[in-house]
Structures are given as C-alpha cells and as structure tokens.
Image (cartoon, rainbow, N blue to C red):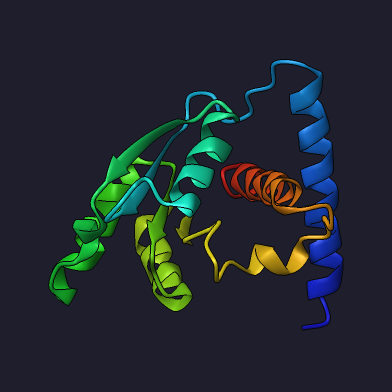
Length: 152
C-alpha cells in the first residue's frame, strides 16, 4: 500500500517520542484506562509484553479467558458489545486479524490480534540489530505507541 511506508515512519517516530517521555519522568497517558488480555495462557511472551506495554503507560490490565467470544454467531456481537463496555482495548491471543476487525466493529473499542505476537505487523518495523533485548524494547515502544494512538 502506498501509505504504508509513511504510516510506518510516523508510528516509529511516535514510539521514539513516547519512549523518551516515559524515560524522562512519570508519564501515564493511559491512566484510568482498563485493557484486557484474552488468552488461554497469560504467561506467554506476547501476553507478558502486552501487559508491560499497557501497565507502564498507566493502564490497568485484566486477564480474561480466550472463550470470552466463543459463542454462537448470534450472541458474539452482544458479547463483544459487553466486553467493549468493560474494557478500553482487548488483545486476543491468538486471533486472526480479520476476526479482530469484525469484533472491534461490534465492541466499539480497539481489538488486537496478538499485538506483540510472532505474526504481528509491528515486527516488520523493528530496526534494532543489537540483539533480542533491544528488539524487545523496540517492539514494546511500538506497542505502546499503538495503544496510545488506538485509545485517544
């Protein structure tokens, strides 16, 4: 897509600015927000990274089961609306991206499909070459920028 490159550059820039503001003092742009991780296991690397990203921005993080929306199709929209009234954003691990979009439309809040997981589009934006810790720190910053942008 022609807009993908400028959008990626803008996200990287926002991630760098946000990271600098967090390092320079107490910044909590998501204070008062409540996000959820919907997963079978909440101790996976991507679930832990999402929790770190959200909580370091001041958000409260809840763990819910992955079956929160595993209902018959007639009831999924109602369940999504209820979840949207409880949380400001939800990361479902795992979830196909097209399913995340339809759930987001029903919930009215950002729904992510494993934002920091191995299939995350954010991985394509990583530039750190120094090693796993630096790449994780960069991914964390990108996730934080996405969370702040999504919950404006």
